[in-house]
Amino acid sequence: MADNIEFNEPFNWWYFFAIIAVLVALPLMHIITGWFTFWF
Image (spheres, rainbow, N blue to C red):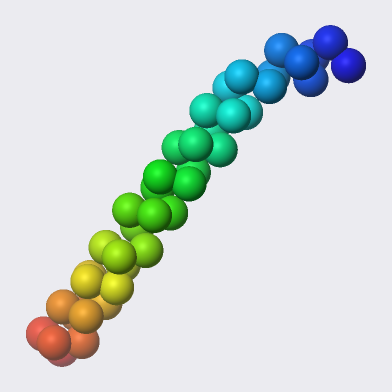
C-alpha cells in the first residue's frame, strides 16, 4: 500500500504525458494519413 502512494506522482505524470501525446498524435495521424492518401 505504501508503494501505491509513492507511485501516485509518476503515475499522474505518465497520465498527463499520455493525454498530451494522444491529443497531439490524433490530428497528426489524420494529417499524415491524408498526405499518404494524397501522394499514393
